[in-house]
Length: 168
Ligand code: FES
Image (cartoon, rainbow, N blue to C red; front, side, top):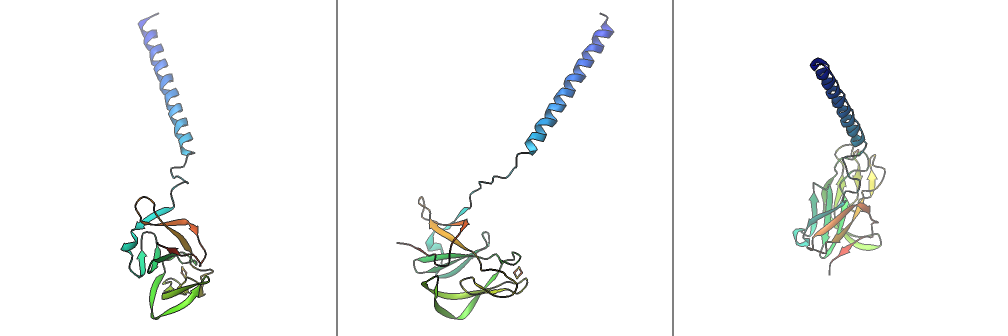
């Protein structure tokens, strides 16, 4: 075999090897693209802070778009996401707090909600009363983290309006 032929064969083999590698890399990339980058099992529970971090009345948590209400040792959480098209509703303090019954249990309502986008209005327990909002604001389950005592919200777990978390 001449030196020229040997060189030609070597270069041909090198080219073929590079081609196979390129195809394998492309195939691997294609397969990887079928695997989503997001985890559908992402936790939906979020620690919100110690109960003592929450004043009596209302605290708005912008990151979670959530209102947490405290009345003594009792807490509940209402979503700030308007049920029309998802704008963040505003809490408006009532001139006179209203003692009422929500979900069969007594509750002192101190605020009502209004959406700045298209004017939907909600009562203090999140019931839609005017505007295009088709349904009430969501209530989410609250609990206490066993490891450090922080309040925890589960944003995947809507609860009825009779939900209350009462601390011992
Ligand atoms: Fe709230 Fe339209 S998004 S009224």
